[in-house]
Length: 263
Ligand code: SAM
Image (cartoon, rainbow, N blue to C red):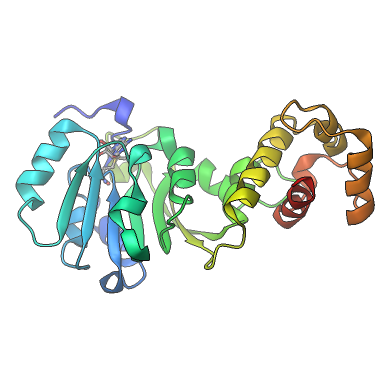
């Protein structure tokens, strides 16, 4: 079959790297496993038998047919034919069953997939192949150009680590970008309530849309925030922070504190 660029199909052909990725999962026998975008089974073949329950989520019609032919009859294997962004993980895992997620995912929807996985219920571990630049954004420090809404959104509710690089030559077709395997471990229990997370997302989206402006200006003038002058002064007084700083200089926990004051 011809790989579909629209579905981000770059298949991992290096068996050592396939094994290295699946061996990086925390003890898979203890929890259910979900693979996003199993494709032709590069990782799947090493996941079979590791857990009592393996859920494969694939969108491509042809690949789903092949997966059904290869793995459909296996005990504990479920094939979900749909867009991962529309999967209801709560329905897949009622009763708070713990689960881990692994995937060499389509790069065009990396951030939406990560944010989707950080909805509730959250996996205990997320092991993903991502574009190198996305990995840099996830582990970025405040004040750098990589630091932004993705960094804050993930690191306020989870820890994130770059594990190892994967060369372009390990894929077919060979992609135009470099790749890195990352591990995201959501904090348990979740440190923020759902409404706190929504408020933080509103603040960070506005702040990083206007990343060159002083934070106090964004708080006042951005249509999604629109604070009056007294409220902005109140935030400055109660935190003791200089709000003429640019948003990118505020650490994740500082943005959390401001978003709580906004609430
Ligand atoms: N895991 C395989 C491998 O490592 O060789 C395939 C990886 S390929 C980078 C991404 C896979 O995700 C493809 O099989 C593609 O069809 C699938 N995919 C693309 N968009 C998807 C979506 N929205 N939901 C589920 N799967 C998707």
